[in-house]
Image (cartoon, rainbow, N blue to C red; front, top):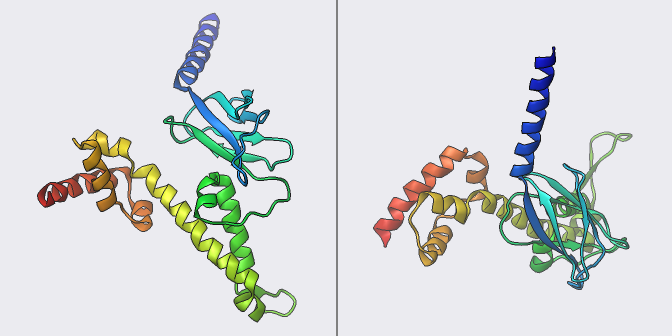
Length: 229
């Protein structure tokens, strides 16, 4: 019994050490999305480990995290947001939206949205831009001309197109990236940029490809790249 207790204790210690070693320091900056002002005193919590920190007077913060952890960011007067950790390179810039604020979307603003905020804005645009309502009481589907031709609905559909382009771009970038390509191919900086532009896959290919499929695609594309250059 004593031996089992010792083994269990050692297993817990080893697991804790492995988790600690898998963590890295994440650096970030908290901004207001409308003005780009840096926000001090924002509370950042790693929801996986419960570790907390605050942004300094320059909006900067550092916190330990592992891949796939989720950070929650709170700041007085701003809507709570979350950031998914998917890389350890560079600085995470978090753009906060004020309470009850309505933002005018364009490519610049959309690029600043966190993944969770981007998904929320896509859902909102879909609701506001849909052509029809399903009526439970009357049965069937009721088409609304005001939703089809109204200014708000048109803006919502325009916003949806911008938002979905950004979302798809992020999905592609997280799989078809320089880290993966350089692990497979001997490319210099200028050739890497050219290769990534020329052979960037579309969203359908990325979503349907396994990791092995993607590696094969990169290697096959490199043969074409060498022949063309």
